[in-house]
Image (cartoon, rainbow, N blue to C red; front, top):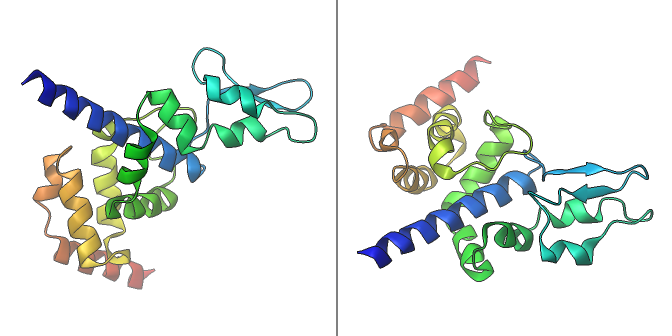
Length: 175
């Protein structure tokens, strides 16, 4: 029983890492850091910097080198201490394409710029965004994403997605 709990925790951590990667890659969230006097961005030593960051020190010619690195899946896997290959495998699942589009449509989804959200915390907001923009996705995309989100918030199981798509389409026509 203990190993199952550990496996579930590892999977949730991978999902949280992929969520953070998606939010940073789409520029919805930023890594934690500051600009120095020369205009170079540097990762915060206590909360953001990892050994992988040393190879990406900024310079006058490339002042944003480290912030770009801190948006990569490689860095975020180091930040969460998860396996990079497992995170890449998770990222290839179809619901992440839908979530990427949702966060681009919905902005910061109610978070501070340097937040590190968990999927558990953001599931309800993601479901609300999915409802709001349901007509932009296929039935299959909606079904798979709702099924996946229902692990984190049971509200996703109770929604009639066909009706939701129709209502969302009507709202767009009214604009």
